[in-house]
Image (cartoon, rainbow, N blue to C red; front, side):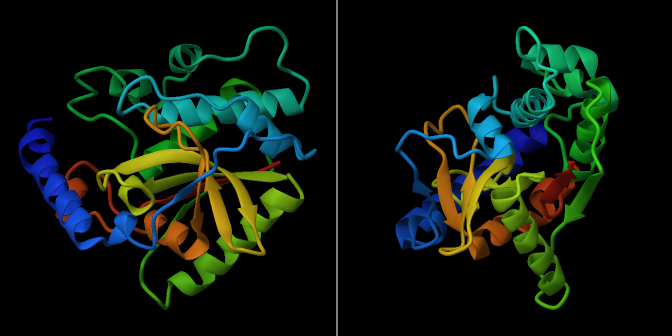
Length: 251
C-alpha cells in the first residue's frame, strides 16, 4: 500500500497531466464516447440482463465484485433461478472465499493486496459461477498482448466472440483493462463487463462499474484491444499485474 501511495500514484498523475497537456490518449481521438440515451431491451437476454443488473462498485478496488455480481444475476435471471431479491455484492463476498476475495476488498487488503489481477479474477469468476450453480460450457481466461505477431489471432478470436455476444447472446465477456486507455482517468487496472458490440462501426460498449462513470461508453475495437493489452511495466508488476485480458463465458 505504501508503494502504491508514494511510488505508483505520482507516476500515474504525471502521465495523466502529460496526456492532458499534449491531448493524447483519452484526451485525443481515442477517448470513449458516452451513451446518454436510456437503454431499450432488444431481446438478447444476456445483453438486456447486464444492463438491468448493472451496479457500481462500493469502493475504488471493488470493481471485480460489482462486475461479477452483475454477471451472476444476469445468468440466474436467464435460467429462471432468480427468485426473490437479487444477489448483492456483500452476498457474493460472504459466499465466495476464493483468493481471500473479501479480505482483498477491505481497507487494508489481504497482505497489502487489493483488487484482482487477471489470473485471480479468473479463479474468482469460476468459483462464483459454481457457488450459484450456474452451468457453463466454457469459462476461459485470455491474457492479451501488444505483440503485433502474437496478437493477430487473439484479436480475431475476440472480435468473433464480441459478435457472438451481440448477435446470439450465448456468451459474455468480462474485460480486465487499463481504464486510462478509454476515458480521462488514471492508467490503472480495472474490471467491467462488455455491454455491446456494433460490428458495422466496430465500437465496443463498456458497462463501467466505476461509481464516477454515470453512463456506459463506447470505444473502437482497436482502442478496446489496446486497453486490454496495456503494459503496466514496473508499476503494477510488483502487485501481480502485467497486461490485462478478458474472461470469456459461454453457456
